[in-house]
Length: 407
Image 1 (tube, rainbow, N blue to C red):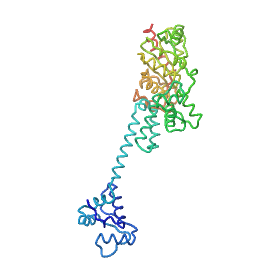
Image 2 (cartoon, rainbow, N blue to C red; image 1 turned 60 degrees about the vertical axis):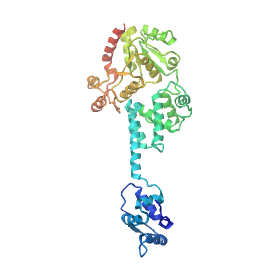
Image 3 (cartoon, rainbow, N blue to C red; image 1 turned 90 degrees about the horizontal axis):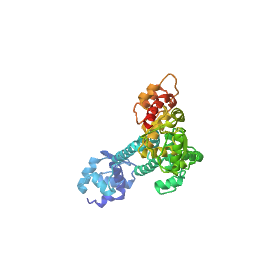
Image 4 (cartoon, helix red, strand yellow; image 1 turned 120 degrees about the horizontal axis):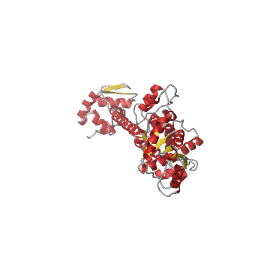
């Protein structure tokens, strides 16, 4: 449309500015109020409106009145004239709704990501991040940062590499996980939720949490306890493990040995995984050289445990995991299953309820169990923990059947 010069006069700018602001809200506008007009602005407004005297410094105006005047002058209504003079009119309400939709979509994606869904303990981290809001200034930038954090979490525990090497392998940037950065902070907070501990408060605590996550850990002192493993092959590790299994003894395998040996492959169809060394010790005592393949996570699994289980599962063995029925036990079980593809072994609600008796400890903070929707609720309702040693007889019975099948 063609706008007469008189409508573009500087003294009418307050009118168009206020109209543009109100139209941009996205709400219906029936009137506007101009405030603090000076004498020249009042004169220009009186001329536009055909008034015989100046309006007051603060004056309400009906949009319908303006429509009638502007239709006669320009052939367009007030909104069209305002847009021609001041530029495109937005819709802040629509924009707010769109931003809210984008944020909701971000959090839904984040909460349902496979890394999070596989370990319900990380739901607390998701809630923590969401409370901070959009942390990178925009939804796309925040999602990109979260995707990088999830990439790191999927790769943990690492295999003892230095942090810079780990970062380079993941992102091609040795400084991507430098201390103090947003990404490093996000990952370490997630690991704290994963392990059920307080987030690290200083540099030594951050280094300790990286080490616990298999980054820059000691590959000689990071070990996994095994029994009954008879890997095929002529490598040193395979021959040594067969020797100990044939002697009816357990063995501690270091991360260094796993890294420097071919991935072990066992001919047995099943490998049994326990959380507590007591169960493995009882199995070795009972079965001796007939002990079926056993691996112990010794609580939270370190990088040696995860590396070995992935190798065994990757060569066709079915992994069966059992742990404590308490808060930490459910988190550890979910972690092992998510990282290695292990299946639950005697870890159902029915198994838990069958093991309850009059003596028990508190279960602590209980996270959901992805493999059994009722298990966490039952633990909370009963307020009772059942440690793995309590059901040793049942587990050894299963192992006895496995031992018979293997020999």
